[in-house]
Image (tube, rainbow over all chains, first blue to last red; front, top):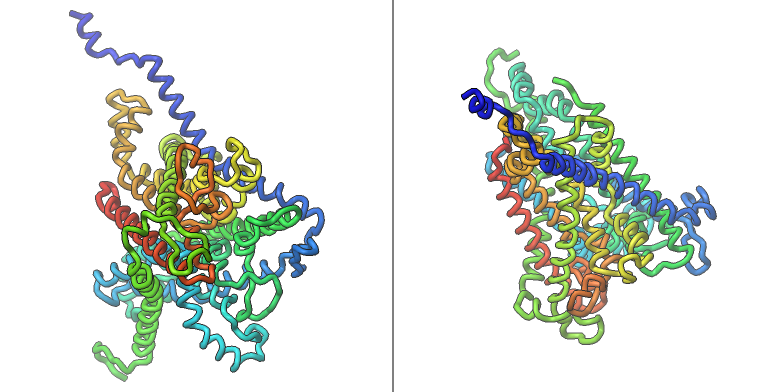
Length: 316
Length: 297
C-alpha cells in the first residue's frame, strides 16, 4: 500500500541519455551563436591581412592620393573614398526629408487607414527589388530621362565646381539618385515603426492643449521618436556606403578625380566589384586596403547607430 | 480678437499646417513613384519576352548572334541552387544561434556581444562578404581544388542571411509567453524537449517569416557572387556542378546589362522580370505567414 503511494508521487528519474541530449543541444546552440563572432572576425582578419602589403607600402598616403594606376602599379584611393562619402551623404540628405515625411504621412491621420497601409506596403516592396535590377533600370530609363536636367544644371550653374563638367551618361549624380531610391525604404520603414511606438497619450495631450497637427508632430511626436529615426538614418548611411551593384552600373567607374558630381566617378564598393575579379599582385592588396577602409567606415557608422539609439531613447 | 472656437482657415498656423500636409503628401508620392516606375518598366520590357523557351535555353555569349541572346534556363536553376546552398548553411546556424540567445543566455557579456555582432554583421556590405569568401575559399582553392564554385557563392550568401535568421529567431522566441516554458518544465520535460516541442513550434511563424525574407534577400544579391560563383554559359550537370562556376539571374542581369548588344540587354530585362516576380512572391508569402502568427500583437 505505502509502496504504491511512493511510486505514485516519486519524481521520474531522468535517464542519463536525456541529460546528454540536453547538454549537447545547449553546446550546439552556443557553437552556432559563436559562428557570428567567428564570421565577423574572419571577415575583418581576411581583409586586414590581405591589405597589409599595401598598407606597408602606402601607409596613410593611400587615403589622400588620387592616383590609381594599375599600369604603373601605383595606387591611391582618394577618388573612391571621395565618391563613397559624397554619394552616401548627399543621397542621405535627400532621402531623410522624403523618408521621414512619408513615414509621417502614413502614421498620422491624413488619409484613410487602408490607403496608408497600401503606401506602407509599396515602400516595403521597393526594398525587395534587388539592387542589380535598380541598376538596370537606372542605366536604360532613369539616366537618359534625367540627363537633360543635369545638362541644364551644368549650363546654368557650371561655375560651381560641383557642377562643372558636362554630363556624358554615367556619373556621380545619377548614382546619388539611385541610392536615394535604395535607402528611402529603410528610412521610411524604421521611422514609421518608431513613430508608431510613440504612446498615443502624448499625441492626445498635445492636441488637447490646442496644438495643430504639425506643431504636435514637431514638438511632441518627432522628439519622442527621434532615437529610432536617427538609428534608421545611420543604418541607411551604412547601407548607402556599402551599396555596390546599382552604383557600379551607373557611376561610370572612372579613376580620374573630379570634384564635379556630373562627371563619372567611383566608390570603394564599385571599384571592388569592377576590378577585384581581374586584379593580381599588389592591386589585390590595394583593393583589400580599400575594402578595409570601407569596412571601418560602415562598422563605425553601424556602431554609432546602435549607440545613438540607446543614448537618445526617451523614457516616457 | 476672436473668442469663439470655430476653425479659422486663414490663421497663419492653419495655413502652415496645410502647407506641411501638402508637402508630406508630395514626399509620399515621390517615395512610391520609383516602385511604380521600376515595376512598370520591368513588366513592360521584361514581361513581353516571357515564354517557355526562355527557361529551356542557355544564354548565348555576347556577339555570337545579334538577333537573339538565348534564354535564362541555367541562370534560373543556378539562382535556386546557390540560394538553396546558402539556406542549408544559414538556417541551422541562425536558428541555433537564435535559440541560444533567447532560451539559454542570461544577458551576460557573451550574449550581449553576439547580439551586437549580429547587428554589426547585418551592416557589413555584401561586397565585403564576397571579397572575404574569395580570399578564404576561392583564391586558396580550399574546396577540393576548385576556385570559383556554386558552393563558394552559397557560402558568401549565407553570411548575408545569417543575421536576419538569428534576429528573427531570437525575437520570435522572446514573444513566446514564459508560462508555456514553465508549464512544460513543470510537467517534467527537459529543456531540449521544451524548446523543440513547445517554444519552437509556437514561434515557428515569425521564424519562418524571417527565413523567407532572408532567402528573398539572398536570391537577389549580386555583389557576393560576381567573384565567388562567377558565371557560366552551360547547364549545371552532375554532382561536380557544386564545384564549378555557375550562372545566376542576378549576375546575368549585371553582365548583360553592360553589354553593347541590344539582344543581351533585352535578356537582362527578361531575367529581371523573372527575378522580381520570384522575390515579390516570396515577400508576399512571408507576409501571409506572419499574419498567421499567434503571438504577434
